[in-house]
Figure 1 (cartoon, rainbow, N blue to C red):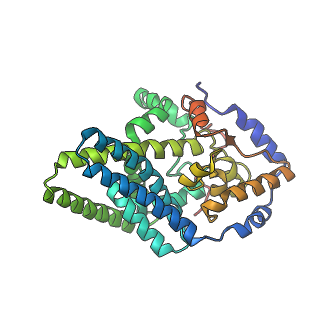
Figure 2 (cartoon, helix red, strand yellow; figure 1 turned 180 degrees about the horizontal axis):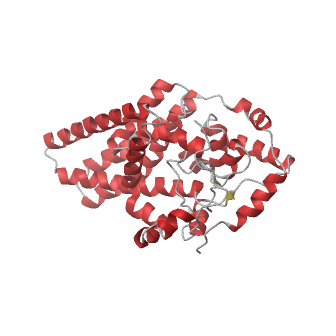
Figure 3 (tube, rainbow, N blue to C red; figure 1 turned 135 degrees about the horizontal axis):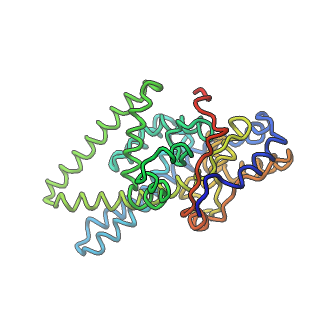
Length: 349
C-alpha cells in the first residue's frame, strides 16, 4: 500500500487537540518508577553475554563447517539483544552506575564496530527532536518535499525502504549513518568530536587485537571476516527491524513534547521473555516520554499512562498486536511526512 500521509493521523490529532494532559500529571503518574535495580540490569547483561560468548566459543571450537555457521548465526541473534543493553546503559537505566554502564557498553560495542559514544550523543537529540524537528538523527520517515526532490533511484529506495534497510544495509548501514551523524552535528554538540575520536580509536584497537589473535592462532583471516559479517547480518536485521517498527509512519506533533513522544512512537505487544530480550522497548512510546524509567518498570508505567490518557479524553497509544503482525502490516507501507504542519528546528536542546 502506498500513501503520502497516514489517514489515521487527522482523526487522532483532532481528538488530541480537543483535550490534553498536563505534563505534571503525567510526571506524577510515574514518579515512583524511576528507581534502577542494579541486579536486574546486571543479570540481564551477564546472561545475554554468557549466551553470546558461549555460542561464539562453540562456533570456533567446532571442526564442522555447518556447525560453525549455525552457532555464529545464533550468536549474532543474541548479540543483537546484548547490544540493546547499551541503549539502557546510555540512559543510565541498566545498572544505575553511569561509569560502569558506559564502560560495559563500549566493551561489547567496539568488537562490532558500533560507535556507541557517538550514538549516545545522537540518541539524546533523537529523544528531544522525535516528531518535532526534522533534523532528528534517527528519523526514518521521509517528507513529501524530500521525496519530490529525490532522484528516481532514491525515490525507489524510499518506496522499498524497509526491505533495503533490513536486508541490504543492515548493521553496516546503521554504523555509517551514526558516524555521518557524528560529523554532521559536531558544531551543535562539540563533545561529539571526542566521542568520535574515542570510538574510532577504540574500535581500531579492538579489531587490531582480534586480528593479531587470529594470525597467531594460524586461523584464516578470511574466515574471521566472514564470521564478523555473519554476526553483522544477524544484528542488522534485528536492530533495523526494531527501529522501523518503533517509529515508522508516526511522525507528528501532538501538543507539547511529552505527548508528542507518546503519540509518535509505537508500542508492541510481546511476551514477557521477549520483552526482557529487547529491554522493554516494546513499550517504546512510554520509554520516549520517560527515558529515565528502567526497562523492568515500563509495563507498569504503560498501564498507568493509558489510564491517565483515558481519564482526560485522549486516544489510546498505538499498540501493535505483535512484532510479526507489525512487520506484515507495515513492511510494504509507504508513508511520507506532510510538508504542512511540520515544525523545523523549533526545539532547543
